[in-house]
Amino acid sequence: MKIYNTLSKRKEEFVPLEEGKVKMYVCGPTVYNLIHIGNARPMIVFDTVRRYMEHKGYEVNYVSNFTDVDDKIIKKAIEEGVDASVISERYIAECKKDMAAMNVKPATTHPKATEEICGMLDMIGTLIEKGHAYVAEDGTVYFRTRSFKEYGKLSHKNLDDLQGGNRSLLVTGEDQKEDPLDFVLWKPKKEGEPYWESPWCNGRPGWHIECSVMSKKYLGDEIDIHAGGEDLVFPHHENEIAQSEAANGKQFAKYWMHNAFLNIDNKKMSKSAGNFFTVRDISEKYDLQVLRFFMLSAHYRSPLNFSAELMEAAQNGYDRIVTSVSNLNYLLENAASEKMSEEEAKLLEEAKGFIAKFDEAMDDDFNTADAIAAIFELVKFINTNVSAASSKEFLQALKDEVLMLSDVCGLIVEKKQEMLDSDIEALIEERQAARKAKNFARADEIRNELLEKGIILEDTREGVKWKRA
Ligand code: AMP
Ligand code: ZN
Image (cartoon, rainbow, N blue to C red; front, side, top):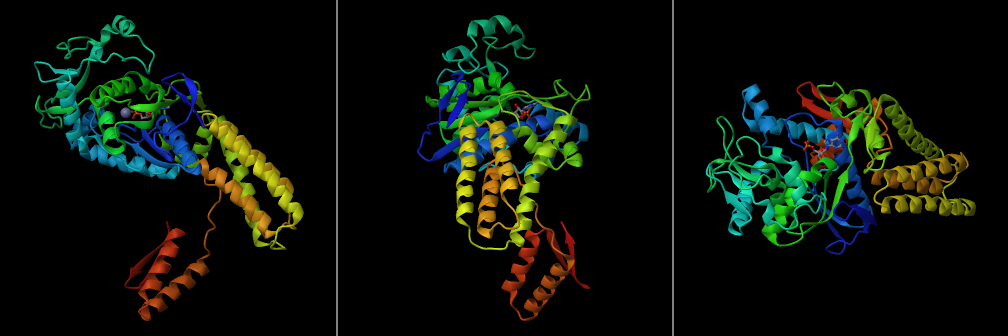
């Protein structure tokens, strides 16, 4: 498996730190609003990387944070006259709903910055002790950038070039810096802002320190993969490397992965220019599986353009797989024979070739565009080689193959069959009878079975009522 590493600017063979295990950290969103479709790109891309790793047999420890203390969150909280945590908790809940609708698996851990302040104080303390950070007169703690000799190794920038081109780094209020390149680790509170006590001043952390600390706490000093959108390479990830490696004395992450940006109608997404969509906006028009399919139809390191035509094309592509699976289901229900014939066994061998093609594409730095092309080839093969005369065993094996490859991409291509009202009512009656007979285990089992199919039961005084979720 090859991964393009931003650090070395080339594709490298993936060798995990520990055999069979992957430790992966993906920078998550700042939660002050509904997530937009640009934010959805890294979520979908790195969820697919995770799924492929799991498909290959790796145990993946996947950590993705929520930045829940930030200027934009505080601004919104002041506007609404509520606590900052009201805003962040609201949008974390909304973000989780969008993730579920896009079939993005929950991370192993989703830490929040505000719950990790202790770790941040520890790391900042270590950096001061080691001479990599200093406290200014007003209590701001800065990282002493020039003290970290390898600064610039990720973004391939030279410190002196940075110094020349970044006089603007010396912004108002930060004039106590020793050097314009230094960046904030801890800053004093402002009136009306949330703050924490620290040895330096009552205040709050800078943005970069949170990821260094959460990665260390949940994954250890050294991890396999650190990922995010390409805008994070500099300064966010560069600063994370400086903090973590200066504090821990070890290489922070072995592989750095960055997705390219999503544009709308070939322009940078911007609220003020009116070309801006939240994931929720898209969900009103499309199944979010189509959005997922659209995101994966391009390589993650290529810029991706969002337009109505391209979404229509994605809808057609996705439907092609769904239709093929639904056709297989129809044939399966009516199959004439059970066992596979010799001829079918040969065809099935041929169909295995598409798995190899899929894997080859994914092994090449997660080329999901080619991987989806392999699924299409499989679908075409299925459509030409199945009929009413096919055996159950053959049909099932083909269906398993499409479902497996789609699942690696996180695509749900089998539509759950809706239960008939009469079937639901029969089960409710059986549940009532079970309750009467004090067989509560069976009654619960029926309730859960119905719940799995999206049927919610409500016990009322007038009897049992049900509705579809
Ligand atoms: P933010 O909430 O701005 O920190 O962004 C969360 C994640 O979304 C980061 O990994 C960003 O790099 C990524 N991101 C933001 N905008 C876009 C975009 N237009 N295209 C792709 N990724 C984006
Ligand atoms: Zn981060």
